[in-house]
Image (tube, rainbow, N blue to C red; front, side, top):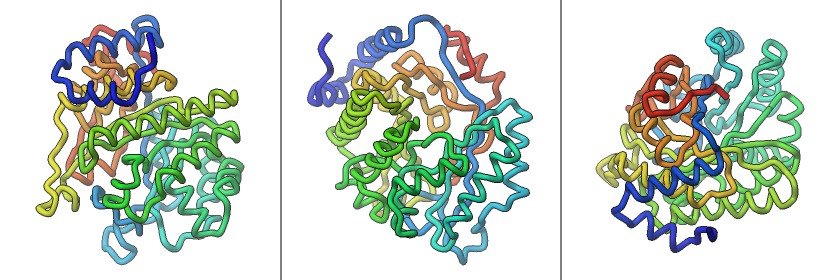
Length: 343
């Protein structure tokens, strides 16, 4: 079968034949992941600060330094959260925060070293490419040097946060102070060239067009082609999730962007699997869609249900709060006809 091209993906996103698209995506998943196993993880999302100067219009989590509920995590709280995660069987921490205007760079290095000193076997999946670009600009360093220093301090892998839509027309509107699409992608390129692994995300369902959704996929696929051709690690997973409008500027009266429905989400999930033929894992976003639709995504191209997410703050700040347990995860995966396996 020939590789899906841009216009074909756009046509599928306009199609009303969701069952057919889902079947095609499920077949593609079976080719990449033969058998009946579908994976999940146990991890915690620790936001080390909610203070952020970015002011993204889709975010309800950020605060200024003077806000009463602004915080920077202290060492005791950080280690307590990791200990609880380990006791629940977790082996990875998703570590991200706001673009803080005054923390010194060695604060981040010390945080990583403290985590690895106390929990050397826990992988730190931390700092989005957006944060790396911010550190580079603020501390007059190259992105490469930022990554090298963070890796030396304990960074294990790079999450794909801050991607939103990798089209600058959209980025200039919803997150004008964040890295451009080119710089976001180049941080991933540098990290992969250094031998690292990472994921890619996408926030859909706000001001982007269908063509811009596919452009995002195209840019991920093109970079993955480049990295794999060089014999390096690349994106291990793609995680699309839907914009949550509650308590955000984009969801207010000025824009009124509504929540993306489950039909549209499953359709995009399936097209992602068909288009991203070089990214091994497609993850279904139960955190934004709920466990029922998230699990249904396993029949629409996803092979991974993500994490039980012991803690999640950013989506919750927008008013969407789904929680689960490992037992419920496994039962849900089995109910869909698959065998659950923790990765």
